Length: 325
Image (cartoon, rainbow, N blue to C red; front, top):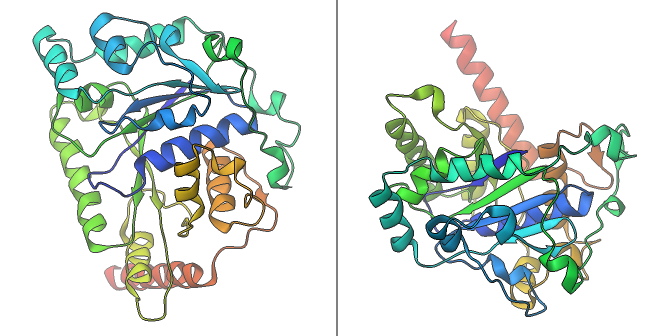
């Protein structure tokens, strides 16, 4: 069971979007996923579009000790959600007063102990060793009322949605519980600064125990929009590919589909444009990379302009290394 947080210091960059999309796409592939809504906006319950009730939120899990396994509700097959709470001050006060910084880490370990080990991906997925796959391998399905309240028996991934804060107790408790962080990134100056500030805040927090610092697993360029009079996205994409120490995943281009999904309380894989929208295919390709699949998605060509930015970055990096030698 791998625990991944979606985190950025900037608001509106796509943290909740990526958390929901990765959770849905992983479940659609056949993985068992738990999405924990740790964002103060607490809007991941839009995934429940049949007006079924969440008896327990993250607040009750932390303050009242409700196990994650009991609180989880299956909003799509193989996708469980622990609904968020906007009462983060109450959660922060509890963690601080109890002097229990490892509370969420222990709750994750209790969850792991209560689950059975799943089969390997190679054993489960007939397409795993194929060189190329298409979107037909993604199957997102609704759940019955009985399935909605049925607890998970095994979990492959825990995806943690997070807000922008890096200074409160719930953030620190989550950092101690996760295996790594994925950082959404709009190619702008403000996102460039917030990415570096997040790294600095992590280093500061773990200055005396660097071996426990959760790694940044990768950067997720998001909402990339190419226009003739705005070269900014390519400038910062190139800077990312050239200077970032972490993995930079392929860009996800701007699409109106995600806003429509938000309004309709559906997943992008349930949208009528699923087979034609470039951004949905790009998110599916990144999901497969996270899974460890080494093939490619059929019909998805890397954007020419983004390819130019990548090639320029590699050329500049090589030139710098040659001068340094």
